[in-house]
Amino acid sequence: MAIELPDEVVTFLSFIGINWPTVNEDKVREFASHVREFAENVEESHRDSTATIHGLGEAYEGASYEALLAKWAALSDSHLNDLVQACHMVATALDVAADVIVAMKVETIAELVVLAAAFIADQAAAVATFGIAEAAVILIEETAKRLINFLEQQLEQYIIAQVLEAAIEPLIDTVAGAVSGLVFEATASALGVDSGTAAGAGFRIDPDALEAHARTMHDHAETVVGHAQNFQSKIAGVSFE
Image (tube, one colour):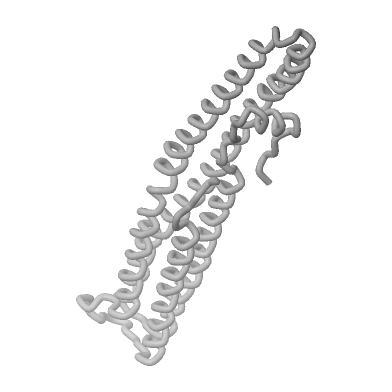
């Protein structure tokens, strides 16, 4: 739940006509949860795909199958593992960003509480002194406005620099690259294996079983595409308000 303003601060800001910044740390944490969910889904699909690749050994034996295993291992390192690690790093960075936003707000709220108390006191003093203390009231209002404006600028700059530019945009590129590599290479490997490799000694193949495994591998690739599309739909037009 996003941090809430004390009642006296709400009343104070409303009276002097200042809006509290709309940046919502809960939205940042929600985004982090989407990133983690995507990473977990990809990890699960990776495990299923790896099991399918190893299951091919029951229907297919030969040098080209060994090449397939090696290619899948390389694919896992170059695409999937990098993608999952990037997702977890970004999710952690988003959680930290949410904590920073909370810290910024808490610090500002503490100062606003003091200003609100001073405002109430000076309002009463202005009545008692027939307006002599009104200058202090105006000063408090100006201080509050500067404080809120500064907080808003800091939040906007932090969101743009640390969250959008440093975390989200690189992640989107990583997702696109990793998924396209997985779909093409995994499916091509499962279907074609390595046509340039000689059968060699110990070659054995069950065409029907091989075809079934290839279809399963293609389904795994499509599943990852679905995970990516679901993730992209969740972050489309992301807003932290």
